[in-house]
Amino acid sequence: MLAELGAFILRTCMHKLRAEIERLYAKGSLPVEVAGQARQVFQEFHHALTHGQVRAAEKHDDHWRVNAWVKQGILLGFRLGDLEEISSGAFTFVDKDTFPARRFGVSDRVRVVPGGSSVRSGAYIAPGVICMPPMYVNVGAYVDEGTLIDSHALVGSCAQIGKRVHLSAAAQIGGVLEPVGALPVIIEDDVLLGGNCGVYEGTQVLSGAVLGAGVILTRATPVYDIVRDEVYRSSSDSPLVIPENAVVVPGSRAIAKGKAAEWGLSLYTPIIVKYRDEKTQGSIELEDLLR
Ligand SMILES: CC(C)(COP(=O)(O)OP(=O)(O)OC[C@H]1O[C@@H](n2cnc3c(N)ncnc32)[C@H](O)[C@@H]1OP(=O)(O)O)[C@@H](O)C(=O)NCCC(=O)NCCS
Image (cartoon, rainbow, N blue to C red; front, top):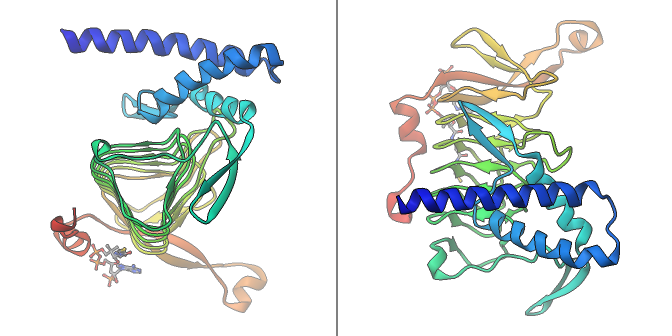
C-alpha cells in the first residue's frame, strides 16, 4: 500500500516535471529572468535522471518507446549550462556546469575500479554494475543491475543497457540525443557484446543475444539470419532489431555486380549463425568470483 502510494506520488511529480520541461524547451533561448527558475526545474529533472526515476526510453507492451521530453530536458541542461573549469589532481577539464562528472560512494554499490573512467551525471548506474577502467558513460544512459562495462567501452548518451549485460573491452554503444524523437540504442538483459563491437543509430539488441567480437551494427547494416532464412534491416520508422538469443558474428558477402564483382570485392556483413545454446553459454561465461 505504502509502495503504491509512493509510486503514485512519483508519477504525479514526474508528470508536472514533464510539463515544465516541455514548456521551457519550447521557449528556445531563455532570458536571464527565467533562467534561474529554469535551472531549478532542470536540477529536479537532473536528480530524477541520475536516480533512474525517468528514462530516455522505456519498454511498453514489448515495444521500446522514446521519452522525447527526457531528451528535451537533457538538451535544456546544455542550453542552461555555463562552462566551468573542473580540477582533479594534476588534470583540468572544462565542461558545462549542469553536467558534472558523477561521484560514487560505497552506498551506491557500484564498483568503479581506479584508472581513468568517467560517468557523466544524468546517467543512471544501478547497484551491482562494475566499471573497468578506462570507460565512459554519457548523459541519459541507463545501465541496469549486474552489468559489466569493460575497459575502453563507451555507453553513449541515452543508451539503455539491461541487466547482467557484458560490454566487453572497447565495445562502443553510440549515443542518440538528437533528434529528440529518435530511439536510442537499446541493449536488453543478458546480452553479451564481444570485444570491439559497435552498436549505433538506435539499433536494438534483444535479450540474450550474443555479438561476437568485432560485430558492427548501424541503421544501414543488413543482418543475414542463416538459421531462419531471413534478412533483418531497419526501415524509415523502425530500427534494426537483433532477435532474442541470436548469435551474430562478423562475415562478408560478395558484391555480385559491376567493377566490384570483377575485382572480387565483398562487403562486411554480420551473420546470425545460430541461436544461443549450451556451447555459447560455455564460451561467454564469466568467472562469478570476479563479481
Ligand atoms: C560468438 C562467440 C561467443 C562464439 O559463440 P559459440 O556459440 O561458441 O559459437 P560456435 O563456436 O558454436 O560457432 C558457431 C559458428 O560461428 C563461427 N564463429 C564463431 N565465432 C566466430 C567469430 N567470432 N567470427 C567468425 N565466425 C565465428 C564458427 O566458426 C561456427 O561456424 P562453423 O560451424 O561453420 O564452423 C565467440 O566467437 C565470441 O566472439 N566471443 C566473444 C569473445 C570476446 O570478445 N571476449 C571479450 C572478453 S573482454
